[in-house]
Image (cartoon, rainbow, N blue to C red; front, top):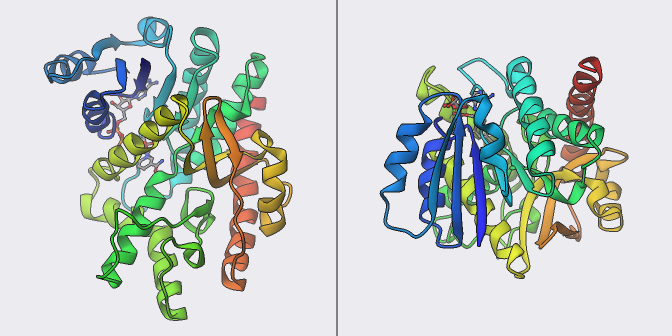
Length: 328
Ligand code: NAI
């Protein structure tokens, strides 16, 4: 019995994500919320013959009803990138959207696990944290920035140059953040192990960091990744659901390192320093973050990349925090 709400359900990500979660047999209630078009999306998806109920909640006055009794909230609400934009360029619009939605979550389902997709994730997750802290309901174990698409891309891009690799089975931890140079794939930690030349490592790292741009450019103004993102978010949600039912599952995500201070020591030593948020491999459990999984060792190339990522991330995190402070 798991209730999932999607905020921004009528959008490019929201629609295929609604479809994929309607097909998940563990979801019993699917609550769809948007400012536009959500009645049509909900009616359409509701005809799929799985057992979950589907609800349509249109407009802000129905946000409370969309969230009441919800276990997991996934947030893809917000504007996507156009060619030439970075994720940070989305800040001004999406920061306000995430703040409003986090306030409603604090009021209507404060114990829910939250997965933020809206970019820039490096700043929108700190915004959500600050809102929840201000309302006295913050639990760092329950707030996630969804970075699964970076992990999905990493395994697929490796397959492009190593045709003997099974893309679906390959696991590559991606740490740091979720934009450009803050995305740090740890190719040395691939499971199963894959051998790369230094040139391959450099090219793959760059492609994983800027893979989103390939989609933005190919869509030529019509948005950013939606289908692969919906797949990645559905996979993350499925992992959360498996964890709620008692399974141990590891998924990388952008979380507060306060969620597991002991587990975070290892990540801090690798270059995260005193940063509050970092994408790390997370062992999920009933509470959300059960443990930050250790990263055994990294190469000098990866350490350098983490250093670069950390400098950029600090600015992104501070930008989110000061947005909520200015708004007070
Ligand atoms: P979209 O524009 O197609 O859909 C966004 C939806 O959000 C629209 O239906 C819109 O009506 C809705 N919305 C806007 N303000 C809202 C509010 N206050 N409450 C509820 N709904 C609201 O955009 P798309 O392509 O679905 O992207 C959504 C977000 O996801 C963007 O910020 C994008 O940058 C981000 N994204 C994140 C990725 C990640 O890896 N975390 C990957 C790809 C996109």
